[in-house]
Length: 348
Image (cartoon, rainbow, N blue to C red; front, side, top):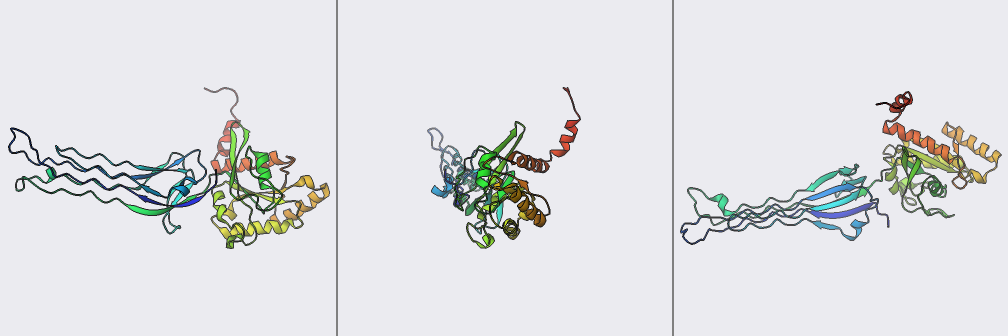
């Protein structure tokens, strides 16, 4: 399935059905009065966040969504039926933006969340509604109310607990494949990852979280270089970031500074998120080189990086445990853990 994280669509609610102009005509009832029914309400346009979707690709092949017009009223005071609604199903984490692509109208960040986008027009009154002492045979009825219409943008921001950040070829995809069951594309050239990948990490039946791997950033990404910062929105909601540094490159300090600079230039609080720093590809380094490059990163970052290898798996469990600790802080689970540790045995 092809990944698509933004789409522009046209939506329109249904017009209300027209009221009916009708008079009762039956044998032995010489003075039958007006009996035109009301028109039905036009269909609404709804949007729903559903599990199991992680792309907006469906909205590339269909961009126009129109709800049904309400059915017209009929004689014998028969009211028209309501027009059929339109339900847009989107992945959890989708934002609805105005046509200016900046104003956020809705944030579909909860599974099952359903919101009304456009309300259908009301149905028109039939002529029986206008009957009165001074007008006992009205010959007019109301047309249905016009529906609403607008263009909107759908922008997906994946819901992930941990985001992976780093330069191209930092080993993010290899790490994701080692930490989860995800199978991202892995190759020995930059920009192998062209779209975000999600992986579910299972440390135990009660310890699970989602990692998002985004395409690598390069210097000047905030100004549109490379793939730009388009995909950084997918880690905005994450609890923390895992910053992977390629240990085989010559200047690990410069690599660290480039990514930190791009995170700060992007904004949206990414630079303020808790960061787990890791020196990757240590399987290709000697013990002396590991220590030297770890010391260089510690001097600039103020904390010692974790040493990992996505190829051999060395250090990966410890890094995942550190990531899980950050996830628990965000979920507010740490306070409950201290109490749970004091409970032993079965409790009613």
